[in-house]
Each structure stands twice: as C-alpha cells, then as structure tokens.
Length: 408
Image (cartoon, rainbow, N blue to C red):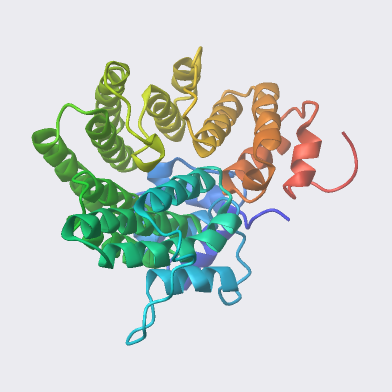
C-alpha cells in the first residue's frame, strides 16, 4: 500500500498545530495556494526548500512531514527487537558490566576495521535488517578494544568505536530515529577526540549536520559543516582522505544553503567541490575508502543533479547527468538516488516515458528501497494523474499502491 499522501500528512500536522491554511501560510512563508493544492492532492510533491519552510511553520522535524525514510514502514508499534538491540548497544545499561565481545580469541584492530568496512557497505546497500543484526556485536567489540592495551592501542580502538557509533547514527537517521542518531553521534565525537584518527571528528560533524538537516535546523547544519571544513583545510591539507572529508563537508554546507532556498550559493560550493574532486586521482588513495567520507566527482555530480531537481530546474539536472560515468566506488544508495532524481526531472518536463524508464531501472536495482520511498510514490502519483500513461506505468503504480487492478 502506498505511503500516506504528503497532502494528508500536511493537513493532519496543520490541524494538530491548531493552524488554518492561512495561518500556516503566514508562519511558513509558503503561499496558501500551494498548501491548498497539496492538501487537495492537486500537487503530489513540493520543492525541498518549501518542505523545510512548512516544517518550520508547523514546528515539526522535516521527517514528520516527509514520512518514513527508505525501506522503513512505520506501524506505530513499539520498536522491533532488532532496533531495541541497536539502541541498547548505542546506550549500554547504566551501572552494568559491559557486554562480552562476540569472539574474544579473534578480537583485533584489523578485524574490527574489516567488520566496519563491511558494515558500511551494508548501509550503503540499504541492507538495514542485516546491519541491525551485526551492529550490536561490532559496537561491543569496539568498546573492548577502546579500553584495552597501550595508549596507542586504545587510541586506535577509540577510532574504531567512533566509526561504529557514527554508523549507528547514520542507521538511526535512516530509521527515522533522529534523537537516537544524535545520541550515537555525540558518543562518536567523544570517541573521535580520543582517537588516533584526526579526520574522524570532522567526519562525525558532517553526520551531525545531516541529522540537523533532517530536523530542519539548517543554520546549525550549515555552520557546523563550514567550521569543520575550514578546520580540515587549515590543519590536514594534501591527502586524499583530507580532500574527501573536506569535500563531504562542503557538499553538506551546500545542501543546507539549497534547502534554505539559496541555490546560487549552494551551486557555487558544489562547483568548488567538484573541482577539488578532480584532483583526487593524482593523490594516493585511502587504505580503505569505505571508512572515509563519500566524495568523488561522481558523488558531487549526483548531488548537483539532486539540488537542481529540488529547485525545479529539470533541464539543468538532465544536462548535468548527460554522459555521466559513475565511478566504481559510488555506493548503491547514491546510484538509486540519481535514478529517482532523474525520474523526477523527466516528470517535471512532461516526459512520462522517460520517467518510467528511469523508474523501471530503479525497480530492478533496488525494489525494496523504492517501495517505501515517499518521493517514488509522489512521482508515480503525478505520472498516473497526468495526461498520458506510457507502457510500464500501471505495473509501477500497482506496485506502489497508487493504482489497483490488473494490466501491463
């Protein structure tokens, strides 16, 4: 069944806030006409800056307005056992002995780093169920290594613990648990400051900025990212790891500017980031890039496409994507986002057939991810209510609960 329509969610949150459509328009700066069209299902989606403004006017997190993140349908029930185990691993019971490591005879820093790299790969593949099974054990192992051995060994263990807690924070954001994410990231930053990795703290800061974006705290997110990027540029220049961390922070700042409706500043920052990414090929690569910020010419271009789509510049988005060759290390989650954004661009241009082609490819690449993504549902709803229904659209509409009945 399709996710709750954006307009229904908006109307429900507006009534809970005790606001009329006119009152919400005044508080958010969004026109009454846009609010009315969304609530009447005459619009199925809105620009991201508009959604941020509505969330601010309603006094809610952006996630409350967007609905569930990819692949995490909410039933309103208590947290499932897997998530309870992750929560307990992030915040162990007070006044209790620590958990035993999963395999103490095998425990070592190289093994922990390998486990972390594999776990981050699961995250980027959106295999959240498997990740929830593994993460508590990884966190227990990391805590033991962070407390054992010489000072240098403990510092290396703290780096592993910080990276594990950062991953826990990312997972919590994807599960719609932003407060849990910030608890994990606060602990990750504390571990990072005691670790042997000088770039881990700014990487965690970037994750915090993302959590703040989800809470519509755009000024806080932007200021954090800019400050951390300045610190990396000043203190850790010259290595591929530093360039990737700095570039990731610059992209984060650009996203905050874009969501504050300052597209020009955001685009300037993205162009600067893309220029820096072009220098990575001349630098020795990281030992394991899966443990460093996602930053490459591909990731920057994907984000530029996303920002153009979100600001209703579909021609610009398609021009940016034309001839794009994705690097081999581009995570699956980024590839799926690109396909979804390109489907949105084709839809905005009235090219229903082009949009369906992108969505069909997305369905083949990540069927579970697509099924619960609110933007995928919005795009298919727009296409279904449009003037033409190209081959393949009915199958997508039925799969996402937008239409019922048989047909091809």
